[in-house]
Amino acid sequence: MTTTTSAPAPQPVPNLPPIDKAAVIAAELGVPVPSVQRTLELVAEGATVPFMARYRKEVTGGLDEVKLQAIKDRVEELTELEARRKTVVESIASQGKLTDSLFARILGTLSKTELEDLYAPYKPKRRTRAMIARERGLEPLADLIWAQATTLAGDRTSLATPFVSAEKEVPDVEAAWQGARDIVAERIADHADVRAGLRALALEAGVLKTTAMGEGESPDRMKYKDYFDFAEPVAKLPSHRILAVRRGEKEGFLRMTLEVERDAQVARMWPIVVKEPRAALAGELAKAVDDAYDRLLKPSIEVDVRLSLKERADAEAIRIFADNLRHLLLAAPLGGKRVIALDPGFRTGCKLVALDETGALLDHEVIFPHEPQRQVEAARRVFAAMAMKHK
Image (cartoon, rainbow, N blue to C red; front, side):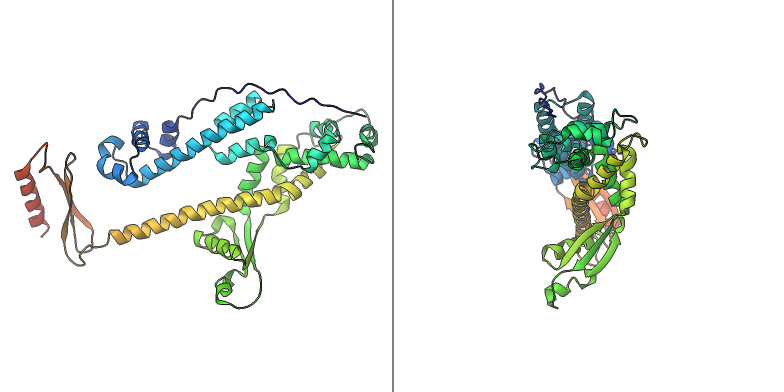
């Protein structure tokens, strides 16, 4: 039997509305939209976070450095997402496979990970078993498995027999069904909801395990001796352990693996994939589900979780470093002495801060000795009063 399928014609690329970045960021951070909009305008002009936090409070609505940095980081992520979204839509449209529902999901996501999951079935791939099976004309047989009909016009053997062909290297019925299952397994592995569910379960219930690599007791190797036989739930891993394990693996002293209970993962896939448990070809679909997990999804999800752990560890390490640096910078400037700190300013005034012997805040004022206010005498009185009040 010879089956030919013509490729869908390329589609026109629909207009992609821009992401309302200010509204998205405001909702995520709990910040007023006007403050975000004005901050984004300053960022577009090249303003730095310290500059905005110190000299543009009246523009940003008094946002602190943390909020300003979060806005700056998120707008960069959303800008990258917009560019990637455009590339994805153009690629899928060029294949003639952009449906209304898929386009709506692409427009609706604000996550780069979810966008890549949606693109996975259409992304150009290296030559896979499923591609080879399609070239051999086995996709109609895969469609029968995927349709999950409860009744079919023939039994398992009679359905596959027309696809047997020495010319197409399908020697028998079992080879035909194997090729069909390869196609179905790839469809399952490319399913965005399947990938998202398995990734979430791995992050919730996965266990990171490490074992020793190499031999000897060199100082470099023994730095990682605590991880030579180590296991800890992914959800509880602190950043310093993640970073240590990654360093040990990079230096060749550790092997890292992610373990998730296989039955739990397959059970998470089952309701997404299996719509009709009584389907005539339910057995073929069950084999395809197992193959999709073992051969395609398990290694792919491990890569995703590793990346997620790295991003989490990097963010936590930066936060800890920033906290430590903040405490250092806020230490008492002259040891056990009270001081008044002065931050010169013109348009927004000079800030005065009184600190006690430990560096704790006692009082703060703003004076305007310069143009345009030029309140020199008032500034002197405020300064003197603060000095006397706090000794």
